[in-house]
Length: 462
Image 1 (spheres, rainbow, N blue to C red):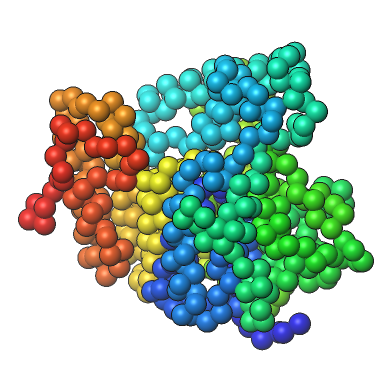
Image 2: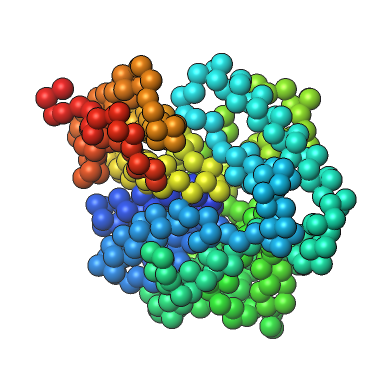
């Protein structure tokens, strides 16, 4: 093994939250000129890693970071990513089908950033009622005749990632294909974390499709080492248990590596990285929740205990393994939770990408601790205001009408964005080239803007 110090990108899992990582990597590559020798990744991070690992050298990497941004923004149609298992499709349009859709998408959606406490209580109450309904529905499924006729298919998951695998292999609809032969070239070490259900162990898929043990170095014995298709490795790494089916690889069934190693820092160090950029997709601290879980449904308790609390502890442990002396870990993490893991709204993903870009800039800035804190507060204020504006605008776009005070409320949010951007500039920090649009116009939506709203908000003289 090459023992000279290397630079690594560590890209964590988090579903659609991975847009944050794309923004952070864009800043590191295009603005700071960072070129990794190693990329380790999990789940959503593995999808990003597959695109980036095709590059060798800075010029190619710049192109791939731009391609990654375009790919993710093209992945804002659910049918490009997910397919429904036959038994779930059989329930389409029914109360049961809607409850399953809710459980996958809405129950995992974070609260609106900056939401007042009263609104949070209302949301939690609605959240609890809907989760109880979802639990009742799932328990009742065996008695549903229509679904039972389809139960001979795969019932171990709700969805499938076959559409995403097809896009990664062959491209189309705005997504560029991934070329495994480019990934396998010398010059970059890749490790995608996966978990073998049969063996009950953490594994990694390498750049040439070899499956190695949990030390990130030792190939498995015999046929268990593969090689496997790297794209199958990506899909396995992203296969969240229960939501997606396990992926067969070299004689075992593999699922999302994030159940053990969501932030594979140790794997990066094992292959020689001594400067490690760990880019997270999910905040390290789950938000406090005053919901009465003593009265909650089983799915609600499971999501809170495993999906939030246990996951947060696992992330902290992943970030603090025993590392070789002299290893530096730079953590670029979100504080504000912008999107849910299965939420594919283009406008929110753009907000999250810009957030990752700014957080990477804040982390890289050569400023003192007090100035860094001011920068972080300004960045978070921008993201909270933009996310609130997006949700408010989305309601207006859907209703196609406005009420008194709507424009004033949006203008207040745009002023927050403008003032926080000014604060960043005063600290000498960069902003993305299109940042003026964040406060002078609207966020990105699929629907058409209501004619009762003006084309823009503030101007440079405000």
